[in-house]
Length: 179
Image 1 (spheres, one colour):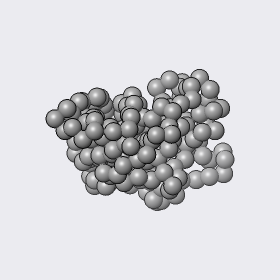
Image 2 (cartoon, rainbow, N blue to C red):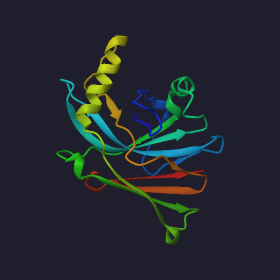
Image 3 (spheres, rainbow, N blue to C red):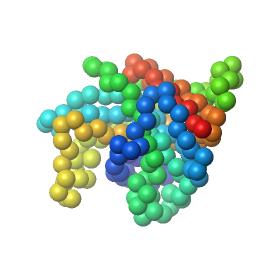
Image 4 (cartoon, rainbow, N blue to C red):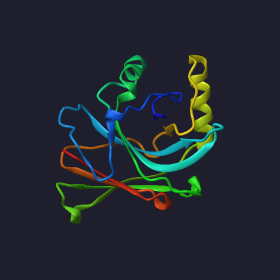
């Protein structure tokens, strides 16, 4: 996971308790600064290669300053959840352009395009970075592990009543609503 204000990438962890599904509603009323990061999910193969790609959204609470790296890492880089889409076989990751659209309180006629972005790093480089980071700690990536490969747009702030629709081009789309 890479953030635009840090000098280098950092690695956090994903937990099942934060897994949300495409089309679900997430309660954020007690979050300080809720936001969404538009990501590419990478499934690791048996030999540490990229075995699959899928769209993903990372749900974050950016209530702590980026300058406090210890707080960031202690809070799992502000990660509160993740949404995974279906894998798309044979996709060229460089062909993906993610477009983020927001509606408020169900008003589809007021849809607003908030951001557009492309992948900034080869998914194989992301897997190699995560492997190299984990190795000194006695941990190795296993076949089937998933990595979210850093946001392709700046974090998108959200509020209760917002619904985001993210079109990932050839990778499909994801929708999430906030309450």
